[in-house]
Image (cartoon, rainbow, N blue to C red; front, side):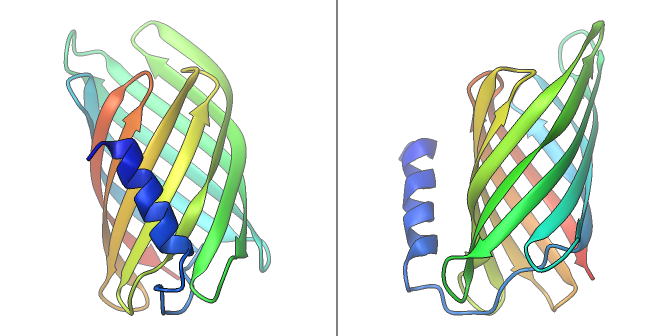
Length: 178
């Protein structure tokens, strides 16, 4: 099954009435690793904080190296997000913000936008499906995320994605929600 078909199937499952748990947190810090096929890999740090019931801010920092030529890769994203419930367990999520990429001698900044669904598939298992556009890379990234919650505050997550420009990527992270 292609990643695009898997993305559509996950989105349909999230929006159906099969999901039966409480909402997810938009107040967290997390750290993890990312691998973009044969292009680059590194660590990513992310934090989000709610402004009110539906609005939040999010900051992302990626630090890595290219696999060819050993150039540094730095990405910063600063986004404002909006979420609203579709049902008692699934949220529609939308974000827009600033991004800056530095790879070797390349340095460019622009905007990014994200839209998707995020919700609890069971008491401890969260699913997410997103499409994210990067103005700098002029590409769209389809992302699927799964997260296991040990308790209210701690969880681990894995993600897979396919970017028009960067091909497939994989990641794992640890999150502390507050």
